[in-house]
Amino acid sequence: MLRIVDNSHVLAVSIKKAKNFLRIDHSADDQDLCTFIKAATASIEQDLGRSLMTKTFLKQAFIRATNSGYAKIQLPFPPLLSVELVEERTSFKFEPLTQYLISQDKMLPCITLPRTNCLIRVRYKAGYGNKPMHIPPDLRHAILIMVSDMYENRSTDTIIPNNSLLQMLLNPYRVVTPI
Image (cartoon, rainbow, N blue to C red):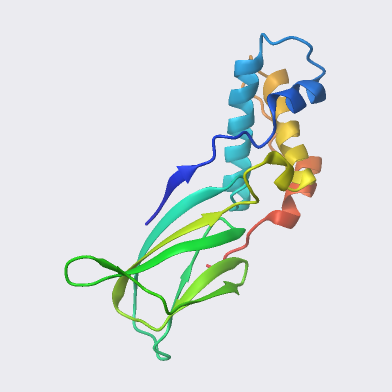
């Protein structure tokens, strides 16, 4: 189980940047632009498997026995900023763990624990940072392309699904997870 327990309320691209990109000089569409920025950001995060703005996640997983006696828990939606808490479920409550290793497993960060057959809870922060300038410029540009498309096609259902420029900007950041 994975859930977001704290989400940044800062937009990944400012309304001012979007208005400059779209050459809009009025404020009548600011609410729509805000909605489009949020939708584009969420779409890109899902597509890439990355968190753009800082979010706090809570992951709970039952780890099974392995031959080595160690277990790995992958932490989705990188980049990992910090691990705030690792806990193990004991008889009646969760108890903090202090012995664990943070490493990179394929494209995802993970925690390796000297435990097996137990319920583990991990609270961690992931994303590029709390300010739009922390997000790589090509990802911010991809958001602007999507916002532009949403703004220009407000009255239709056509959103450009296979925009090659958009894919070129996003592909280097795509998280590939093993099946």
